[in-house]
Length: 476
Ligand code: NAP
Image (cartoon, rainbow, N blue to C red; front, side, top):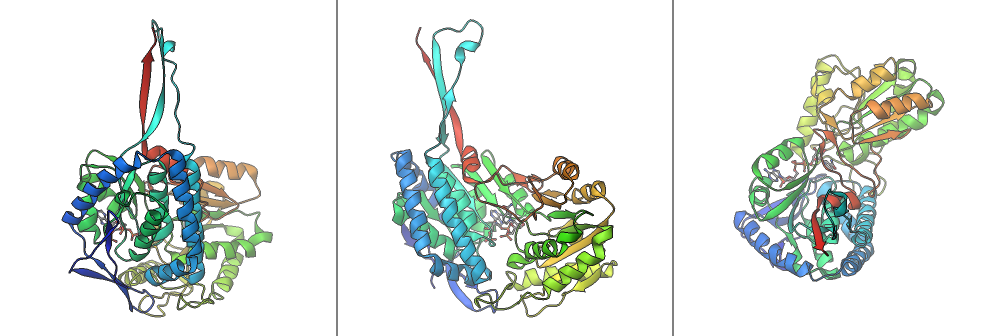
C-alpha cells in the first residue's frame, strides 16, 4: 500500500519513503513519504486558505459534515479495522472497538459544533458605566497542528481533528510514522464528507523532522499533542508562543481494599484486562496494583490464573486476545525493565518471556522495589507490578509516588475510603470500583503532574481550540 501526504486534497508523493511494518512479523504493510520542513510549510500555507473557507461554513454545516464523516467511517469499519491491526498490531477485536469509538468521537464533535456559544457580559456592573451592552463569543484559533501517537491512531486523531473542525479551525496532522496510513484514510473521509480539502491536511514523516517543523511554524496557533512526556517537553520548549494541549503518559495505579474478597476473581480479571489490552500500550493501562495485605496471595493466584488463559499471537486471528508490541526496540526495553526489577528483588509470578521478537507473554511481577523503572516509569508493555499495602492511606501514598497522574482506581465498599482516595490521589480521573483504564469519549480526559495539560473529550477540547472575543456596544 503506497501512502501519500494529503495537502489541499492532493496526494503528495516523495522519492524518499518510510516503510510501515506489521509489528507481528515485520512484513511490510506499506510506505509513506518522508516529509520535511518544505512539505510542512506548504501544508500550513494551504491550511491558512482552508481556515478562510471554514469561516464560510455555518455551525450546522460543520455538524452535518462531521455527522456524515462518522457515517462513512462506520460503513467502512472492517476495512479500517484491518488496516489498524496491520499498522498497530492490536487484535482485530480491539481495532473494531477503536473504529466504533472513533465514530462516536466524530458524532460527539458534530453535536458540539451546534453548542459553541458565549454569554452576555454585564459591562454596567463596573462603577460609572452606563449604556454599554455586549457579549463574548468563542471563535476558532486558525490552523491547529495535531500530532498523534501510534497506539490509538484513529480515535486519538478524531479527538483532535473532530473538535478542531467542529469549532471552525483548519488542521495539519502529523501522525506517528508507524501508523500513518489509517490517518490518511480518516482525512480522506473528512474531505469526502464535505470539509474544504484545504482544511484537512496530513504531512507524514519522522517526528524530529516533519513534526518539529510543524511545532516551530509561527502561523500554527496551537499544537494538540498526544504522546510521551519526553516528546511533549521538547515540543513545548521549541514551539514558542502558541497554545498547547498535552495528553501524555502515565503508570496508572489501582488499589484493592480489604473488603473486596468476594469480588476478587472479577477484580483480578478486570485488572488483567486493563494491564494487557493492546499489549499494555494504553496510556491508562493498569501498571501498578496495590492490594491490601490480607487479600494479596488470593489476588495473585486469581490474576495469574486468568492471565494464563489469554491467547497470545497473530492479532489478525479473531481468537487471539493479545498481540505484539509496536516494534523490536520496544520489546527489548520492556524485557530490560522486567529483568531490572527481578534483579532488584521483585518476583516474577506469570509470563516474563518473549514469544517472538515483538510478542511478550502477559507478565505479572510482585513485590516490586519502588526505585526500579517498572515502578517509576511507564512500561507501555504487557506487564503488571503488584505490591502489598496495609490500608487506604498507604495506597494513596504509593499511587501518588509517581511523576504521572492521568487516572487511578480503587475497589472498595467503604464510601469514606473511596472519597478520601478521590480527594487525595493526584490524577485527572479517579475511578471508583473500576480500573483506571476506563474512559468514555465524552468525559473530560487528561492528566495532572507530568501526564499533561488541558482536557480532551470534544466539548472540553473545543474550549481549548477556541478563543474568546468580547464584543461591546455603546448605546448611550
Ligand atoms: P511519542 O514517541 O512521543 O510520539 C508521539 C508523536 O510525536 C509521534 O507522531 C511522533 O512522531 C511525534 N514526535 C516525536 N518527536 C517529535 C518532535 N521533536 N516534534 C514533534 N513531534 C514529534 O509517543 P508514542 O510512542 O507514539 O506513543 C506512546 C506515548 O503516548 C506513551 O507515553 C503514552 O502514554 C502516550 N499516550 C498518551 C495518551 C493520553 O491521552 N494521555 C494517549 C495515548 C498515548 P514519530 O512517531 O514519527 O516519531
